[in-house]
Length: 121
Image 1: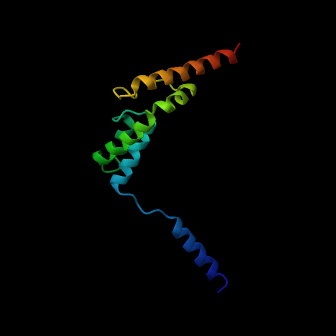
Image 2 (image 1 turned 30 degrees about the vertical axis):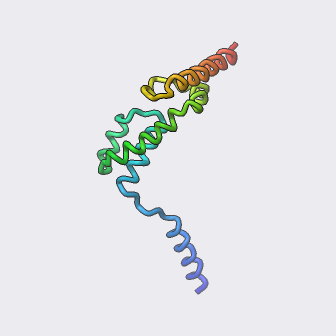
């Protein structure tokens, strides 16, 4: 009896931690959001390799991607990207706030380059 109780508690704790399986729509929404958050193009090589493994839900992927891209292209976070050394290569082209975003990104990039210059002097 002494061994059954700890085993039972362990089994209950372990089952409480397990996740329910995701639907294809939830998976693709999350995948799209991750790609958007990291500045990937909507169609990319990584997407093609994942499409082979999981049934593709384009609507969920697009919805997640647009949400992630909106966060990635936030002009108030652009300076941080530039100062980390991330180059702007048109990831946010065509968005209404692109001018402000590019200016902040460039300001961060210039600071990044300047810090690098002074480090090696």
